[in-house]
Image: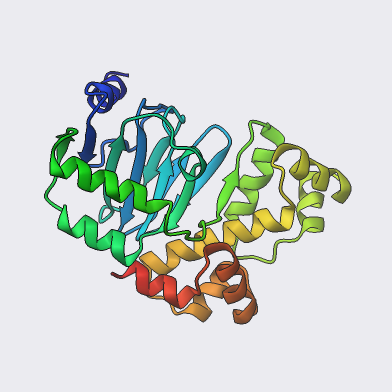
Length: 262
């Protein structure tokens, strides 16, 4: 609790400043929120951001925009992950800035970050650094980029959590709705309704998201080729794997690998 209070105080103690933090200060903190909106940029790995309703997966060279006073907590596993947090004051600007969203880091944003790579701490209105960072924020909504769409819904239903845990543990095997229902001791119809009622998503969509998340981890952390990775996450058809990967991430697995290695 002391660490959490220290972070919140650090972010909100100067309500009119734009704060830049480059250390991984928010890792594994409990659910918390700030009076400032947050731009969280991820490089070199995959970060996991939890809210009360969903788990968000932020791959390398992507950022997540977190509106002000939005409860969240951050987790990650890899040591080579580099995170930049920029906290912005002010009233909500509406539209793009009122919604949680994950987007790729564009070339222009990357160049602006490179220019400001040594910046750390609070910057105040009237300084050119403040105006530069404000321009960076305003640019985000003008790029009209597609959202990265892997957002796993969560639930406190113990029965469904046991089922989804079992699916995770055998993600590389042939997992079916009928087989999962049989193992859980429920009918296919009941399991279908449970996913829709508690997670507001179909069984197949949930399974596909889990498989692509695992594939992203394997692309980042192993030397397996794409065919091997497809089989490891339960696909028998490399084309189906590639198509589902693109549908959920807006890029092919090979493009994701190239981006992750930058």
